[in-house]
Image 1 (cartoon, helix red, strand yellow):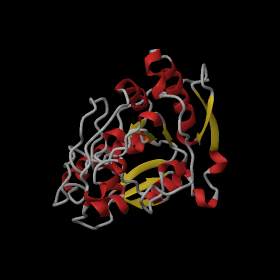
Image 2 (tube, one colour; image 1 turned 45 degrees about the vertical axis):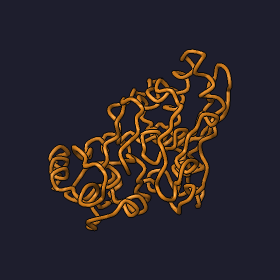
Image 3 (cartoon, rainbow, N blue to C red; image 1 turned 135 degrees about the horizontal axis):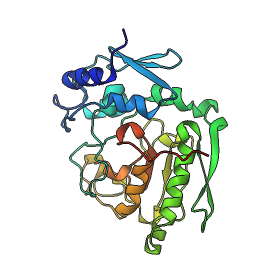
Length: 270
């Protein structure tokens, strides 16, 4: 039976405990945005049926893997779809130190993204990559990202909007550190979102990263950020989350994750 999205969201929000809380030590979400997940990827996702996410090609993925009481390391390394959506992303909020282990969007269900964008190790991602001209009126740097889900078009819109910002913000934009890169995440075995062509790093001269400061092994690291929020707001308006909103922060990092954000600016019809 096909379950209306709103009902599925309400039911899941009422039952979800293993992704947050329950001894995990990070914030319990107000609700799980399953409806937003479907609407964020309309070319790929069709509906929710009970515990299943049904893709348009008929593929079914479990929302809940049945494992309860996950600690943070397990949530991060091997999340199910519920875990991926569990922590609300604070779009539009001022920059502030997040609560411990509050890393919205940092947990990625690898099978979900690999099905959608391909496996870079099998060269499945490369056929969908296109060049985006970063800051076309000045720098004209080429950044390779995927065209799937309109990521390249959205990054073009971001670039044009950023170029219209006051000149004092230009040092935070140029040069960009690139987009597609088939690699694991630093210090981990997990695939980087750069491997899907959905992430871009900017402001490397002003970047702050949790592994670079304090005693990161002991999880004692002060929050730092030098990226102006005017820049962050433009990325978020076009479907990109910011690594500066993570407790394990990475302030140069932006990643296309519209399922975690409110409605984004539509791509103009051509």
